Structures are given as structure tokens and as C-alpha cells.
Image 1 (cartoon, helix red, strand yellow):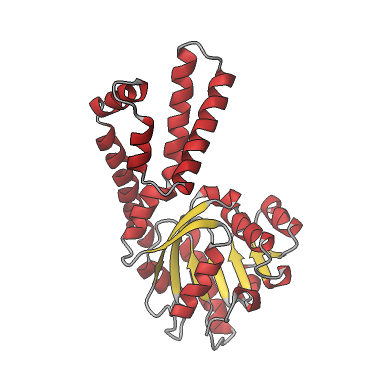
Image 2 (cartoon, rainbow, N blue to C red; image 1 turned 135 degrees about the vertical axis):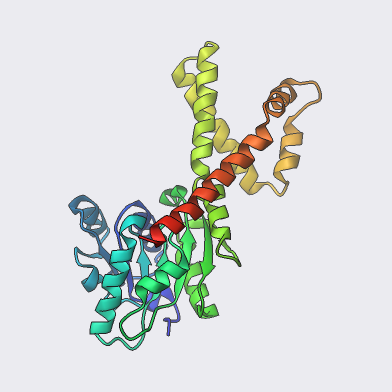
Length: 289
């Protein structure tokens, strides 16, 4: 049975990279749970020291980190997930644990079928699993995350995971089909890179027309930030916000018509679908490894 709140849980992270740092940082900044209830297993000295500097427990042993965990975040590279899951399943079986921890997997592309199979111990038991697709703005406490609950996950367990995600994620969306996690990947998981690429090209265009790179960069960054803030804080839709800034026969309309002539809608749709499809493909490839 999952603990009633995060504050009373023992939380373990397998993998101490950037996303782990984002989650732990959010939990501690909001005083959601005490440091001595958080343990991070990380093989790399630099990453492990960063986590130790935050005041949480650290180790190089996945077994030690997971031994008493009520909630375990699988934050490893997808390519090593199978071995880590099987190691942990054996650990819990050897310890004859009565209650298995709730698993939160942020290992990109790894399906619930694969995770359940790898986590199933010699006694045939497997823990409940929730798949999560976060994104890198979580590092600033501005994340967007999609979640899907595996079989058997209770309402209380979903609330626990929601509390965990809200420590670093401003948009936390549960989806009702696992394949929609791949869509979340194409939308918000990979999405920050789309905006970075847009700013990259805006700067290059302005520089080619005479602005210095420094001026163009400052203006483009603030434009992106300001537009994003309007999207978040305004009650109006993106469509209406676009119309508000587009005067008939004005400069913005000229730019948008150029986008339209270049097939902008199709370009965006193809990009999101390509990322979504690649997420599904990786799940199949890595699940068979």
C-alpha cells in the first residue's frame, strides 16, 4: 500500500541526472518531503556529488537505494532500463518484501508491458507502474508532463504521483491510453527544442538583415519569453492571441502569409508526428532488447 503523502514516503531515484535533480530540487524547495527520506543511486561521481550537495542520501548501489523505497523513480537511460529493472526485482524478491514500491518511470519509450515484464520477480509479483514523460523546463520548475497509469494503480497512488510531478511541473496531464504518451513526447517532451530552433532562425534572419547577433539574441529571447507568458497567463486562446497582434494588411499578416505559403501547418504537424512515431519505435526496439 502506498503511503498517504509524499512527506511520509521513502523516495528512491535510480539515476541522478538532470531530471532527478529537477524533481529533488522541486521537492526540497517546496518543503514537500524531508531530505533524509530521499535516496539517489548514481554511478557518476559528479552527478552523485551534486545530489549530495542538496543534502539527500546518495549511493552507487541500486539495491541499497531501492531496499526500503515506497516510491521509486526510474530515471535511467532507456538502453540500460532492462538490466536495472531485473536487478531491482531480484533485490525485492531476495528481501522477501511484502509490499512492492510504486514505480514512476521516466525512461523514454519503454512501455508498460516491458517494464512489467522486467520488474516481475521470481515469485511472479510485479509492482504498480506509472509512465511519465516530463520535459527539460522542469529544471526551472516550469515543466510539462504527461502521465499514464498501469494496471492496478489506485486513485491514491495517482494522487501521490501527481504530488511528485507538481513539485516541478506546471502542467501535469493524465492520459487514458498509453499510446498518447508518445503524442505527449512529440508535443511537450521534444517541444522545447522546436522553440529553441525557432529562436535560432529568428536570430540568424535578423543578423543577416543587419542587427548584431547580441541585439538579435536579446530581442528574440524576450519575444519568445513574453509570448509564452501571454499564452500561460491570458484567458484567450492561441488563435485569438494571434489575431490580436495581426492587423489587416500589416507586417505580422505579411509574415504569417509567408508561413502559410511555406506550408507551416503541415511542417509542424509532420514534426510532432515524427517525434511521436520515433517514441513508439524506440519503445518497440528497446523493449525487445
